[in-house]
Length: 227
View 1: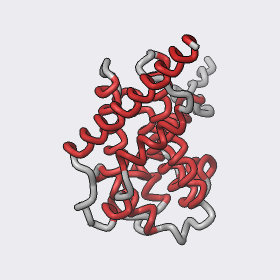
View 2: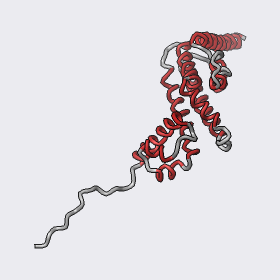
View 3: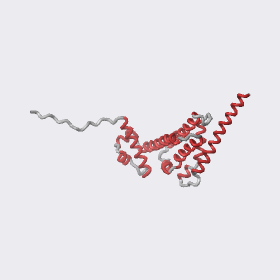
View 4: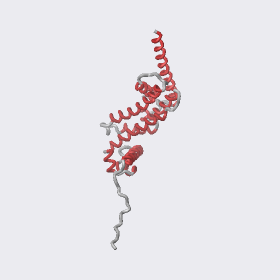
């Protein structure tokens, strides 16, 4: 009697699904961010990123390219996560409460220990990333400013403010809350970094100013209608 050929019990390995591929890419970015923060850019290798993320160097190179491209992707992902966090921050009902939530997000994105450490890392590698510096700054600013503007768009939709240019309002709000201190904080000079009490005063000032602007518009409309 002829013996029956035994079939292999091991499943065939096929190409990863798109979902699995995205999970692997996310692991690579997170592993790279952790290693960059711990060991710096020069002290981190693609092989170490591969080992920590459990993704092969070949796949990392195919989807990210060089280590510098991985670094750029890490920065972009940090900015994207921050912009998503902004939408979860402003859950209050009053104008001042919502603006205070937005201010806390802006402060965390600019002055938290992780943000300052990463700013130092990026600035320290400015010469190495000469071709990417403008792109990195543009993308980071885009995510940050758009996140704050979405809060102002929602405030206008809910009737809590009456302004036409939400982009300008968001920019002025960021300038007021953050100021010019992030580079100083990155260099260890924290005396000019706004504390919680100063931030609250700034938020109250901005809320009163923007409310007064809306009232002024209302009075103008009434006068125009009466005339």
